[in-house]
Image (cartoon, rainbow, N blue to C red; front, side):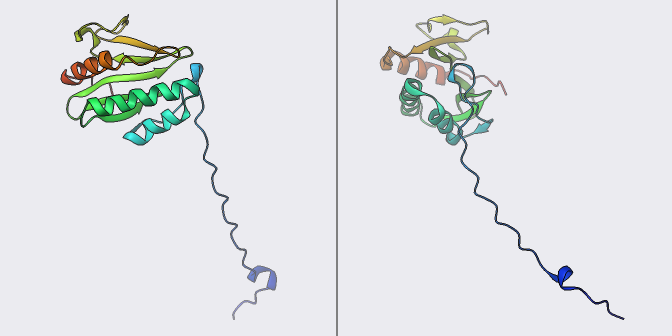
Length: 158
């Protein structure tokens, strides 16, 4: 014998539509460094760029454009909240990290560059260039370093 259903149990409830997720800005870590998830490609690097505050955004945008113009076929990724640049099959040659007073440009095989980038590192082979707010990019010097760095075997740090 079939069961009778009451009106209450037969009532179907409609699922509420989920509210659209608000696009959240990345968290800024110490020094204004954006927290961006590990990912490959230009999109995460652009997300990093867009999340940088003030002058750091402008300076990094100029640096990113210079890298793309100077190194054909450059690949990009974000690792450890830092953009990395490399070439297919060669590894990574450059990384950038935002600190309070400057952008730290890490030439991963910088001890092989001539002239040497100005700041030493605890990491063997790495040399740094600090880009501060009041200093314009020295495009000729950076272009020379980028070409040299891209021609060297890169780091396979991840």
